Figure 1 (tube, one colour):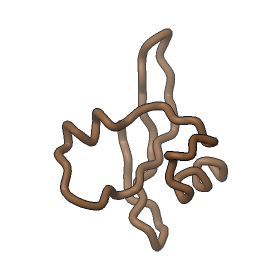
Figure 2 (tube, helix red, strand yellow):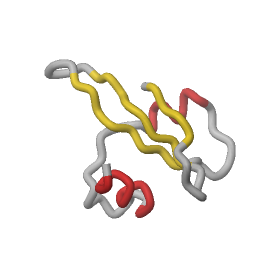
Figure 3 (spheres, helix red, strand yellow):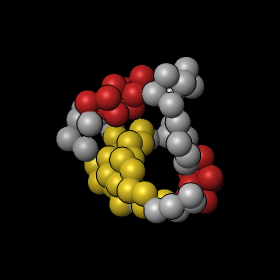
Figure 4 (tube, one colour):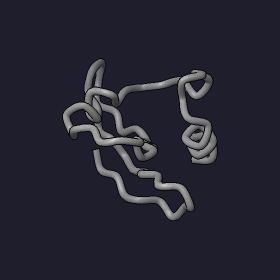
Length: 68
């Protein structure tokens, strides 16, 4: 995964991830800064594929994903 800070007023990381499973794929990544301190390992465990219609998804992240 390679991300960089986006030029928004909110702290958002955007980039690309290379994942394997049924086959290799390069997917867009959008991450919002987590409130509070968590370890890098915990943050990586929280990563996953999420539907844009999932109600648990942050609305800013969903709108940015739709724009990409």
